[in-house]
Length: 140
Image 1 (tube, rainbow, N blue to C red):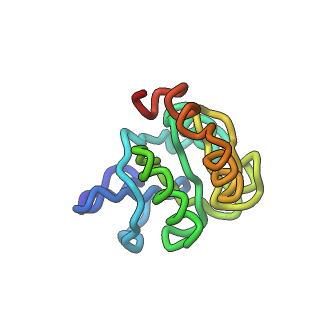
Image 2 (image 1 turned 90 degrees about the horizontal axis):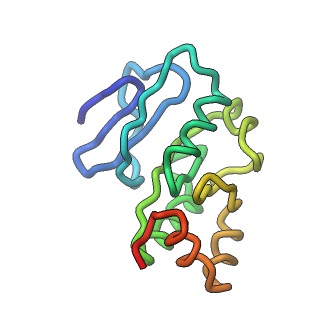
């Protein structure tokens, strides 16, 4: 396990991020997915961190806990179509900065999709894959 400025990278490619203060001990292992660079400016506000992360990652899930069952199901659904989202744990203060005040919440291409039910609706309507292709998260 390696620690990089508030980012814990586990041997199974799981990533956990603390948006506030870098932890002194590793967070619990999660079944989240791998991520690209997640660097932080310590003076950056929670709002600006969230906005930046949303703009940097084509598929992003914010969750309260890595053990959240709805987050796990969202990741599984996305992985079945070939996408591995970035998953970031947030606290109550950071959730208040999101477009949707519940977690988990999914963003695709910088736009808020919503929670689990919205993701399933998008999938069942047949628009999920085309939207993922449109933002470059999936090859057609």
